[in-house]
Length: 201
Image (cartoon, rainbow, N blue to C red):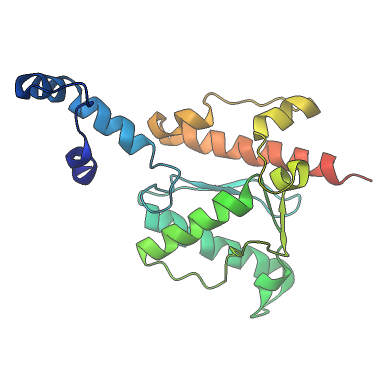
């Protein structure tokens, strides 16, 4: 926040020192908060609030703890234990994972990888962050092709999937932990329905 605050400057049309000083007094904190909010989806500065996930048709789980590091560490541990419980104690269990998500290639997987590095969390399995991963089904890429964009909520509308949510993705940064967890759970539930519709024979 200090770095962002120091980067804020009055617009170029303000020339007089007193006008610049007045603009800064009136706008510095608002502009700082706005600039900070734009970093939320950047793994360099953003934070993991929670992680929603499910395996096959199993229950939807939301990992959310007091600190970001604990959230990421517990998710990684729970995922590994869940898969090993189902598939046995294979040291290369992660090679059998097929990751499914919306904008998963360009956002979620890379964000998790970036935050694990920033936080110093050593994951016991690799995240598929290469450009064209083989074991990832990204509903956005499958629907639009590479380089194009569609909102998950638009696919929900197109498929007639009703979302039961109190907030939107844009409101996550100001929502309560409970609202964020519920939103994350709905994301996974709706995504699973979208995936099933897209791969049905």
